[in-house]
Image (cartoon, rainbow, N blue to C red; front, side, top):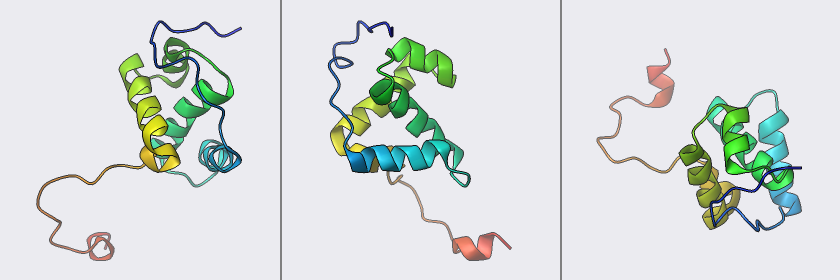
Length: 102
């Protein structure tokens, strides 16, 4: 049985919708997924699907509890869309991505 974290936002967690479950499953078990999306999906999958504690998910995935809480909170705020990187400030790149890869 999963241990419950002392973190007040951890419990109770809502159930995943069918669409959320499908997207997370594709990211967690897919073959061609960016590592950062796989990591975030693994965090959410552990919390919501397995109902594991923040500490247990952090240990299993290999990140800090702070990182688990960050992605849990972003998921609770915005759903699957919250797991993507947010736009960063700064100067835009001078070359288009397709040109930079050459």
